[in-house]
Image (cartoon, rainbow, N blue to C red; front, side):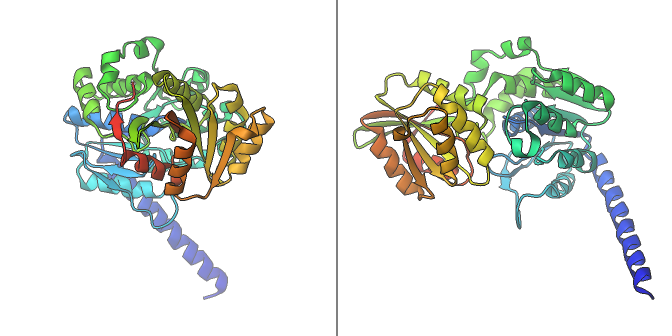
Length: 398
């Protein structure tokens, strides 16, 4: 057989094998009647957990997979297991998640979109999930190196996972026109969460969470649960009882040899708008402290995020000091100085161990302080949260 013939035969066999695997995957998908694909800039892990917990409370056998702070597979009994990754994150793992959900005889699968590249977002939906319900939490300025350069481009990129012939739920308002056009093109019903829906989430509803949960997220999750037949109060009770994502906003208060240190985990909110919002929330909660320290966890592989935050922090309510940890801290520092931030207010703890960072915080904190982590939960950010959590008293952030 000639080389050309061999190549053609091999290509034909591979194509046939791919077609068979694709058909088998679609067959497996049909065994899961309700498939909910969750995407967005902020809050998608939280919303995925809320929807799944509400559905479980409604006696719908539900699996959930999140890719937030730590990738987790949540089984129908609520138990969580880490998602095994032999190498870097890859959208192909969604196939394994579907297979597992089928093996567990799930009636529903809530799965967080893990793709950033616009084409891969489309691939995830069209080939791997084929959702009955799409969910887009919001569209904000983040991952602009992949989905940018503007927030409008981010909104368009997120639309890659809008299902065909299904339903799309969103709490986004600024770019609702874009979502509407795409939904119409794909024959999908658009269900937008209104200001009235958000206002209907009472303080009592939010008080049931042991961490900070946003009314928009709860309203969005409740609307999806209602669509699959779960009563509002039943769903809400399930959400209150669910385990939060490790990156959820929480406060840890400690007495360190007579020093009052209040540590707020805001690492997971890493776009400028969300970060400024929770910084102001933290300042409102601890108005009595004498020192305020902002800890920014930078990542060399997220230079755009460091530059974005550095350019805007000078316009926020000012802390007494900025502690820069992680890697690529100079990117944040350079952008912040150019924006008018006093460089004397910045300390660099590049690639330091978590115990060394803790000592830096203690030196900056004084007798009473608010210390808040921002920018990135990955790497040393999560380690620092655990370090404080193991030495503090947890307090519900209100």
